[in-house]
Length: 418
Image (cartoon, rainbow, N blue to C red; front, top):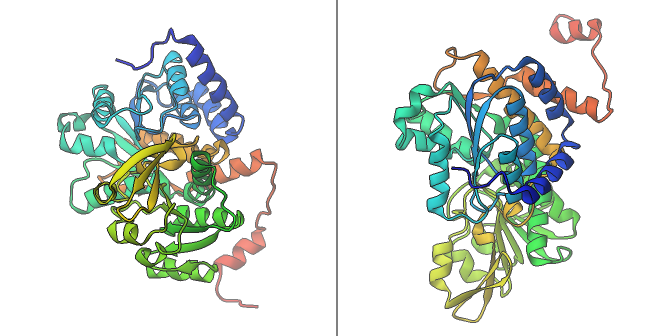
């Protein structure tokens, strides 16, 4: 059953207004939606989506619905659901199984409810649908045409499954499309993570030392935004090339145990486990603030933090204060869950426009190529990626140059070098 009664008009109407507001900043997805309404390329296809239930995701869902899809959704994080949006989507014909703050048992119950729909296409943000299908609902695998994956953490899981021979159907890696990670991960995560931490704490970034664990595209964007607000930035990395890049950008690079001595604000964006652990907690200053902007709440070793502390309490909404035996107080935001969606509204709609355009067109691509793809993780086709970039530029009123025939011939030749 859905968690939202479609008679809950006031909540649903509020969600509809917010969905419409987000749509204003999603011109590429709007163009795809208009085409889908005419062509119905997804007609009758059952889709199961496990994604953050936000205004931007709602516009993706309505685009798929316009294309004829039979869609059921659940949340990909217990704290990221916007309840008014979930109510609105349900009232508009997309059953949503998600409640902000749901416990783990309810979270996985909702995933299984989506799988009870016997989806032919899965849309994941973290690969929970794929892994649940692979481990507990294997009887449904024969229905699957393919899937899409939205985030780095999910792609890491899927590549591990492929490497060990456990990936049972083709999945398109939307996360690594150029029009996704260059913009969504860098600009979206950078801004929305700062937003979530600021909303939760009302902290001043200027003059503080921000320690960022992970210097992928999300970490790059976050470091840039923190620096722009006047923070001193320390980057922690395990990848030598990324660490070198961070150093060349002017950031101090240190191991986390060393950085812990100087940091005021700590943020993880790695997709790994126990990135901030006991050794860091032992060295942190009184009043340090910790947050995670990776998909799962395993990046900060919360069990160790709880074990080390003598007490903990909620000092602000979304902020838990842990008191150490020596009297130091360490603060954890949003239970270590995805801070930009738990404590704020997630990425701005204008960057999610490109990410979700990739999702919609990748679903269409999977249907068109049904039976032709192997059990691999595939990149978003280049023509889709570049097509989205062209549409976004057009929507922004930006024109670019084109190569002449002479230039094309010159670039494809090798005989003349002058």
